[in-house]
Amino acid sequence: MSTDQLNVKKNKPMWVALWPLLGLLFLFTPHGTQSDLTKSMGIKQKLGANVPMDLQFTDEQGKSVKLGDMFRGKPVVLVPIFYSCKTGCAILTDNIIQTLTKATKGDILKPGRDMDVLMYSIDPRENADLAHSKKALIFDALTPQMSTPEKTAAWRLEAENGWHLLTGKPDAVSRLSAAIGLSYTDRQVPDLDKRKTVWLINHPTCTVLLTPQGKISSYTIGNEFQTKEVEQGLMVAQKGGVGRVADQSWMFGCIMVDPVTGKNRVVIENVWRFAGVLTVLGLAFSIVTLSIKSKRENPNSGGGLSLH
Image 1 (cartoon, rainbow, N blue to C red):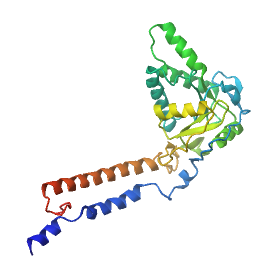
Image 2 (cartoon, one colour; image 1 turned 90 degrees about the horizontal axis):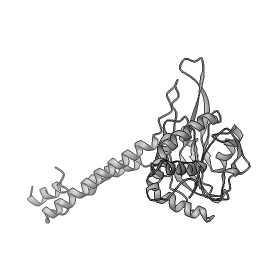
Image 3 (tube, rainbow, N blue to C red; image 1 turned 90 degrees about the vertical axis):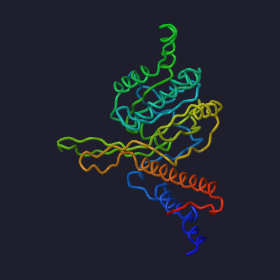
Image 4 (cartoon, rainbow, N blue to C red; image 1 turned 30 degrees about the vertical axis):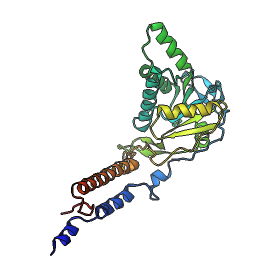
Protein backbone atom coordinates (compact mmCIF):
# COMPACT_ATOMS: atom_id res chain seq x y z
CA MET A 1 0.00 0.00 0.00
CA SER A 2 1.40 3.41 -0.97
CA THR A 3 2.29 6.15 1.54
CA ASP A 4 -0.46 8.37 0.11
CA GLN A 5 -3.08 5.69 0.73
CA LEU A 6 -1.89 5.28 4.32
CA ASN A 7 -2.14 9.02 4.87
CA VAL A 8 -5.71 9.04 3.57
CA LYS A 9 -6.67 6.31 6.02
CA LYS A 10 -4.91 8.00 8.90
CA ASN A 11 -6.40 11.42 8.19
CA LYS A 12 -10.10 10.86 7.73
CA PRO A 13 -12.21 14.03 7.63
CA MET A 14 -13.27 15.21 11.06
CA TRP A 15 -16.91 14.84 9.98
CA VAL A 16 -16.45 11.08 10.30
CA ALA A 17 -15.82 11.66 14.01
CA LEU A 18 -18.50 14.33 14.35
CA TRP A 19 -21.40 12.35 12.87
CA PRO A 20 -21.87 10.14 15.95
CA LEU A 21 -21.78 13.23 18.14
CA LEU A 22 -24.45 14.89 16.02
CA GLY A 23 -26.61 11.84 16.63
CA LEU A 24 -26.07 12.16 20.37
CA LEU A 25 -26.89 15.87 20.19
CA PHE A 26 -30.23 15.04 18.57
CA LEU A 27 -30.89 12.49 21.30
CA PHE A 28 -30.23 14.95 24.11
CA THR A 29 -31.94 17.95 22.51
CA PRO A 30 -35.59 18.44 23.58
CA HIS A 31 -38.05 17.49 20.85
CA GLY A 32 -41.50 16.00 20.58
CA THR A 33 -41.17 13.21 23.17
CA GLN A 34 -42.48 14.10 26.62
CA SER A 35 -43.68 12.10 29.57
CA ASP A 36 -47.27 12.37 30.77
CA LEU A 37 -45.91 14.28 33.75
CA THR A 38 -44.17 17.02 31.76
CA LYS A 39 -47.14 17.25 29.37
CA SER A 40 -49.28 18.27 32.35
CA MET A 41 -46.82 21.03 33.31
CA GLY A 42 -46.24 24.11 31.23
CA ILE A 43 -46.41 27.85 30.70
CA LYS A 44 -48.52 29.35 27.94
CA GLN A 45 -47.26 32.90 27.78
CA LYS A 46 -50.21 35.29 27.69
CA LEU A 47 -48.47 38.53 26.84
CA GLY A 48 -50.82 41.51 26.91
CA ALA A 49 -53.51 39.73 28.92
CA ASN A 50 -54.72 41.14 32.23
CA VAL A 51 -54.70 39.33 35.56
CA PRO A 52 -58.06 39.35 37.41
CA MET A 53 -57.70 42.13 39.96
CA ASP A 54 -60.83 41.16 41.91
CA LEU A 55 -59.43 37.85 43.19
CA GLN A 56 -59.51 37.49 46.96
CA PHE A 57 -56.38 36.37 48.81
CA THR A 58 -54.89 36.50 52.30
CA ASP A 59 -51.56 38.27 52.82
CA GLU A 60 -48.74 37.25 55.16
CA GLN A 61 -50.31 39.26 57.99
CA GLY A 62 -53.53 37.29 57.76
CA LYS A 63 -55.37 40.22 56.18
CA SER A 64 -57.94 39.60 53.44
CA VAL A 65 -56.92 41.51 50.31
CA LYS A 66 -57.87 41.75 46.66
CA LEU A 67 -55.18 41.18 44.08
CA GLY A 68 -55.69 44.73 42.84
CA ASP A 69 -54.80 46.07 46.31
CA MET A 70 -51.25 44.89 45.72
CA PHE A 71 -50.70 47.25 42.79
CA ARG A 72 -49.33 50.63 43.86
CA GLY A 73 -48.36 52.31 40.60
CA LYS A 74 -45.23 50.20 40.14
CA PRO A 75 -44.47 47.18 37.96
CA VAL A 76 -44.99 43.90 39.79
CA VAL A 77 -42.88 40.74 39.78
CA LEU A 78 -45.40 37.91 40.22
CA VAL A 79 -43.90 34.65 41.49
CA PRO A 80 -46.04 31.47 41.57
CA ILE A 81 -44.49 29.02 44.06
CA PHE A 82 -45.47 27.18 47.21
CA TYR A 83 -43.78 28.09 50.43
CA SER A 84 -43.00 24.63 51.80
CA CYS A 85 -41.25 23.57 48.58
CA LYS A 86 -37.58 22.67 49.02
CA THR A 87 -36.61 22.14 45.37
CA GLY A 88 -37.30 24.40 42.38
CA CYS A 89 -39.28 27.02 44.33
CA ALA A 90 -36.50 27.34 46.88
CA ILE A 91 -33.89 27.67 44.11
CA LEU A 92 -35.92 30.35 42.32
CA THR A 93 -36.47 32.27 45.57
CA ASP A 94 -32.77 32.07 46.39
CA ASN A 95 -31.85 33.32 42.90
CA ILE A 96 -34.23 36.26 43.28
CA ILE A 97 -32.65 37.11 46.64
CA GLN A 98 -29.12 36.85 45.23
CA THR A 99 -29.92 39.03 42.22
CA LEU A 100 -31.62 41.71 44.31
CA THR A 101 -28.83 41.61 46.89
CA LYS A 102 -26.26 42.34 44.19
CA ALA A 103 -28.53 44.98 42.65
CA THR A 104 -28.76 46.75 46.01
CA LYS A 105 -25.04 47.57 45.78
CA GLY A 106 -25.78 49.46 42.57
CA ASP A 107 -28.93 51.00 44.03
CA ILE A 108 -31.20 49.37 41.47
CA LEU A 109 -34.13 46.94 41.58
CA LYS A 110 -35.14 47.84 45.10
CA PRO A 111 -38.43 46.23 46.20
CA GLY A 112 -40.96 48.80 47.30
CA ARG A 113 -39.28 51.56 45.32
CA ASP A 114 -38.51 50.33 41.80
CA MET A 115 -41.00 47.47 41.72
CA ASP A 116 -43.16 45.34 43.99
CA VAL A 117 -42.76 41.60 44.42
CA LEU A 118 -45.85 39.46 44.79
CA MET A 119 -45.50 35.78 45.58
CA TYR A 120 -48.56 33.55 45.74
CA SER A 121 -48.81 29.95 46.83
CA ILE A 122 -50.24 27.53 44.29
CA ASP A 123 -50.97 25.20 47.20
CA PRO A 124 -54.35 26.27 48.63
CA ARG A 125 -53.64 24.31 51.82
CA GLU A 126 -50.86 26.72 52.86
CA ASN A 127 -51.75 29.57 55.22
CA ALA A 128 -50.72 33.06 56.30
CA ASP A 129 -48.53 31.77 59.15
CA LEU A 130 -46.35 29.89 56.71
CA ALA A 131 -46.27 32.91 54.38
CA HIS A 132 -45.24 35.14 57.29
CA SER A 133 -42.38 32.80 58.25
CA LYS A 134 -41.22 32.60 54.64
CA LYS A 135 -41.18 36.38 54.29
CA ALA A 136 -39.10 36.74 57.46
CA LEU A 137 -36.53 34.29 56.09
CA ILE A 138 -36.41 36.15 52.77
CA PHE A 139 -35.78 39.51 54.40
CA ASP A 140 -33.25 38.19 56.86
CA ALA A 141 -31.22 37.12 53.81
CA LEU A 142 -32.03 40.13 51.62
CA THR A 143 -31.64 43.11 53.96
CA PRO A 144 -28.24 44.82 53.60
CA GLN A 145 -26.29 46.17 56.54
CA MET A 146 -26.35 49.93 56.11
CA SER A 147 -24.11 52.46 57.84
CA THR A 148 -26.48 52.72 60.82
CA PRO A 149 -29.15 50.44 62.30
CA GLU A 150 -31.73 53.14 61.59
CA LYS A 151 -30.89 53.15 57.88
CA THR A 152 -31.00 49.36 57.78
CA ALA A 153 -34.45 49.37 59.42
CA ALA A 154 -35.71 52.05 57.01
CA TRP A 155 -34.45 50.07 54.00
CA ARG A 156 -36.16 46.93 55.22
CA LEU A 157 -39.45 48.68 55.99
CA GLU A 158 -39.72 50.19 52.51
CA ALA A 159 -38.83 46.88 50.87
CA GLU A 160 -41.24 44.86 53.05
CA ASN A 161 -44.08 47.22 52.11
CA GLY A 162 -43.48 46.25 48.48
CA TRP A 163 -43.12 42.50 48.96
CA HIS A 164 -46.09 40.33 49.84
CA LEU A 165 -46.74 36.60 50.09
CA LEU A 166 -50.31 35.57 49.41
CA THR A 167 -52.32 32.43 50.08
CA GLY A 168 -55.79 31.76 48.75
CA LYS A 169 -58.65 29.39 48.25
CA PRO A 170 -58.55 26.90 45.37
CA ASP A 171 -60.72 29.00 43.04
CA ALA A 172 -58.59 32.14 43.42
CA VAL A 173 -55.34 30.20 43.03
CA SER A 174 -56.63 28.36 39.95
CA ARG A 175 -57.95 31.52 38.29
CA LEU A 176 -54.74 33.47 38.77
CA SER A 177 -52.64 30.54 37.55
CA ALA A 178 -54.86 30.17 34.47
CA ALA A 179 -54.61 33.90 33.81
CA ILE A 180 -50.81 33.73 33.57
CA GLY A 181 -50.88 30.45 31.60
CA LEU A 182 -49.40 28.26 34.35
CA SER A 183 -50.28 24.55 34.14
CA TYR A 184 -49.46 22.18 36.99
CA THR A 185 -50.76 19.10 38.77
CA ASP A 186 -51.93 18.85 42.37
CA ARG A 187 -52.98 15.38 43.48
CA GLN A 188 -53.38 13.35 46.62
CA VAL A 189 -51.61 9.99 46.99
CA PRO A 190 -51.18 7.46 49.83
CA ASP A 191 -48.16 7.89 52.06
CA LEU A 192 -45.73 5.03 52.72
CA ASP A 193 -47.60 3.75 55.77
CA LYS A 194 -50.91 3.92 53.81
CA ARG A 195 -52.62 5.42 56.90
CA LYS A 196 -52.49 8.98 55.60
CA THR A 197 -52.16 10.79 52.30
CA VAL A 198 -49.80 13.41 50.93
CA TRP A 199 -50.25 16.03 48.23
CA LEU A 200 -47.94 16.12 45.23
CA ILE A 201 -47.58 19.41 43.36
CA ASN A 202 -45.65 19.34 40.10
CA HIS A 203 -45.20 22.66 38.32
CA PRO A 204 -42.82 24.69 36.16
CA THR A 205 -41.00 27.68 37.68
CA CYS A 206 -41.20 31.20 36.32
CA THR A 207 -41.73 34.84 37.17
CA VAL A 208 -44.23 37.11 35.45
CA LEU A 209 -43.59 40.83 35.06
CA LEU A 210 -46.81 42.86 35.24
CA THR A 211 -47.49 46.48 34.38
CA PRO A 212 -48.82 48.80 37.11
CA GLN A 213 -52.28 48.15 35.63
CA GLY A 214 -51.97 44.37 35.92
CA LYS A 215 -51.18 43.55 32.28
CA ILE A 216 -48.75 40.71 31.56
CA SER A 217 -45.63 42.31 30.11
CA SER A 218 -43.07 39.49 30.04
CA TYR A 219 -41.88 36.26 31.65
CA THR A 220 -38.68 34.75 32.94
CA ILE A 221 -38.68 30.97 32.54
CA GLY A 222 -37.08 28.50 34.90
CA ASN A 223 -35.07 29.33 37.99
CA GLU A 224 -33.01 32.17 36.52
CA PHE A 225 -33.57 35.79 37.55
CA GLN A 226 -30.89 37.78 35.76
CA THR A 227 -30.34 41.42 36.70
CA LYS A 228 -30.13 42.85 33.19
CA GLU A 229 -33.08 40.85 31.87
CA VAL A 230 -35.28 41.80 34.81
CA GLU A 231 -34.24 45.45 34.76
CA GLN A 232 -35.06 45.75 31.07
CA GLY A 233 -38.33 43.88 31.54
CA LEU A 234 -39.38 46.18 34.38
CA MET A 235 -38.62 49.26 32.28
CA VAL A 236 -40.97 47.97 29.59
CA ALA A 237 -43.61 47.04 32.17
CA GLN A 238 -43.41 50.45 33.88
CA LYS A 239 -44.37 52.08 30.57
CA GLY A 240 -47.28 49.67 30.15
CA GLY A 241 -45.57 47.86 27.29
CA VAL A 242 -45.32 44.19 26.32
CA GLY A 243 -41.99 42.45 25.89
CA ARG A 244 -40.89 39.50 23.79
CA VAL A 245 -41.85 35.87 24.24
CA ALA A 246 -39.38 34.25 26.63
CA ASP A 247 -37.34 31.23 25.54
CA GLN A 248 -38.77 28.02 27.02
CA SER A 249 -36.18 25.59 25.63
CA TRP A 250 -34.88 24.68 29.06
CA MET A 251 -37.88 24.88 31.33
CA PHE A 252 -37.34 23.69 34.90
CA GLY A 253 -39.75 23.05 37.70
CA CYS A 254 -40.63 21.22 40.88
CA ILE A 255 -41.48 17.53 40.65
CA MET A 256 -42.35 15.76 43.88
CA VAL A 257 -41.63 12.06 44.20
CA ASP A 258 -44.55 9.74 44.82
CA PRO A 259 -43.66 8.06 48.17
CA VAL A 260 -45.27 4.77 47.14
CA THR A 261 -44.46 4.28 43.46
CA GLY A 262 -41.46 6.57 43.15
CA LYS A 263 -42.41 7.08 39.51
CA ASN A 264 -42.14 10.86 39.40
CA ARG A 265 -38.67 11.80 38.26
CA VAL A 266 -36.89 14.55 40.10
CA VAL A 267 -37.28 17.64 37.98
CA ILE A 268 -34.93 16.60 35.63
CA GLU A 269 -35.90 15.50 32.25
CA ASN A 270 -34.34 18.76 31.14
CA VAL A 271 -31.32 18.59 33.46
CA TRP A 272 -29.92 15.40 31.96
CA ARG A 273 -30.59 16.72 28.49
CA PHE A 274 -28.73 19.91 29.31
CA ALA A 275 -25.78 17.98 30.74
CA GLY A 276 -25.78 15.71 27.69
CA VAL A 277 -25.74 18.63 25.28
CA LEU A 278 -22.84 20.25 27.14
CA THR A 279 -20.90 16.98 27.02
CA VAL A 280 -21.49 16.48 23.30
CA LEU A 281 -20.59 20.07 22.48
CA GLY A 282 -17.43 19.74 24.58
CA LEU A 283 -16.38 16.63 22.66
CA ALA A 284 -17.15 18.29 19.34
CA PHE A 285 -15.09 21.33 20.30
CA SER A 286 -12.17 19.09 21.25
CA ILE A 287 -12.34 17.23 17.93
CA VAL A 288 -12.42 20.46 15.91
CA THR A 289 -9.56 21.93 17.96
CA LEU A 290 -7.41 18.83 17.46
CA SER A 291 -8.22 18.83 13.76
CA ILE A 292 -7.14 22.44 13.35
CA LYS A 293 -3.98 21.79 15.37
CA SER A 294 -3.22 18.71 13.24
CA LYS A 295 -3.70 20.70 10.06
CA ARG A 296 -1.33 23.41 11.22
CA GLU A 297 1.32 20.90 12.24
CA ASN A 298 0.88 18.81 9.06
CA PRO A 299 -0.24 21.19 6.29
CA ASN A 300 -0.03 18.42 3.67
CA SER A 301 -2.17 15.95 5.59
CA GLY A 302 -5.45 17.09 4.04
CA GLY A 303 -6.75 18.86 7.13
CA GLY A 304 -8.46 15.84 8.69
CA LEU A 305 -8.26 14.51 12.18
CA SER A 306 -5.99 11.50 12.42
CA LEU A 307 -7.93 8.44 13.59
CA HIS A 308 -5.60 5.53 14.33
